[in-house]
Image (cartoon, rainbow, N blue to C red):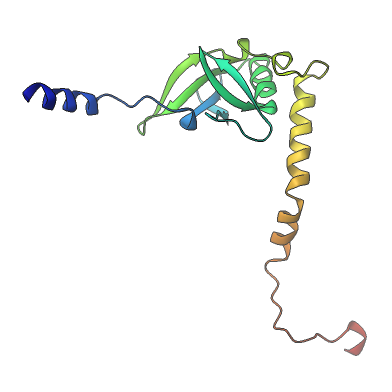
Length: 151
């Protein structure tokens, strides 16, 4: 019984292994400060590609693969990290060297072209959300307003 209690106490003292839901690709400046991040997923979804980073499968957006390469080319350090609540833990370095756009079927595009196309698609998909937000401050009491000429 003592062994079971000791094992349980020891197991809870160890940090939990991060799932892909908590895993991020982090870009850091030369002094170690955070620059940007992209999320990794543990299951497939729309517009996600399966890649293997540091010996483990993840699902990523096309823009994430392009972004990793771009960040590395810009001289920033890129690594896989997860947050344990008191800070970030590095899991793996240089994921940009482990997967390329060609690996996920993108052969004739540069990193910045893929990232720009992804941003445009996102902006296009969310345009009605932005329009709605722009008009959300206006209230309508239900009464018809007079026209400009009736004033």
